[in-house]
Amino acid sequence: MPGSPERSASASGGFTLVEVLVALSLLMAVSIGVVSLFTVAIDAGRVARDRTMAVVLAAGKMEQLRSLEWRFELDAAGLPSPRTDLVTNLAVEPAAAGGSGLSESPSGTLDHDTPPYVDYLDRRGRWVGGGGSPPGSAVYVRRWGIHRLPVDPARVIAFEVLVTTIHAARTRTTAGPRPWNGEDVLLTTMVTRSVR
Image (cartoon, rainbow, N blue to C red; front, side, top):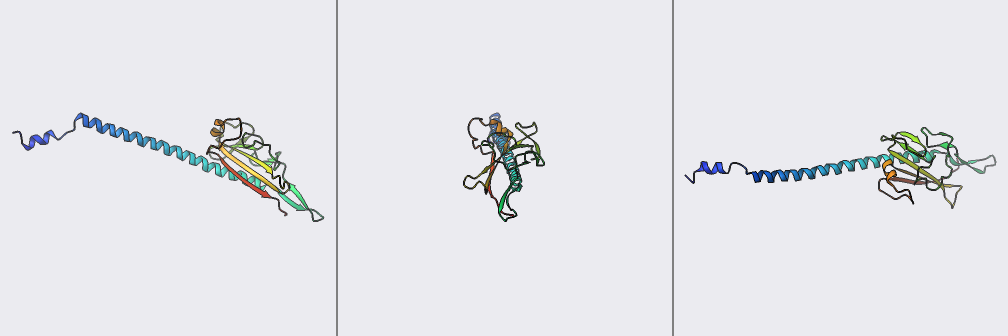
């Protein structure tokens, strides 16, 4: 019988090859989109981790600079006499004598690895060396500059600390000033001499 229920149920009970191919194509398109989202999320997580670590490393170096002696001390006559640390080496861990302390840095210390105004750190932020070129285990480069303000050089000093990844530092052009790439962390502060 042409209109029997058994025959119409068996005719509509399966999928055709075209339907299966269309369903598989849709599934593959969605899967490719999800995989690309995972890639973007992993990359964003890496960038966020590097930025967070760079902020912590820059703040640590800024605190080291601020801890060096930059003050006035009253002499026997009660007059202020400047005291400035000009010998501490902050490019080694722990800080030691034999450096430049708070001596004014040459121009370009934030653009190039200029000893003793540079050090290198590993993925976890541990110090791995200083000098003009990074060791193999270095992931971050930390550079700093020290400048006295021209309007009051005896009282006001400015500190700048730049932290970036070794990869970002190597991919930069060497000519001209440092371009902002969004991966760098730059902290700047000024300190005024006080009488203690």
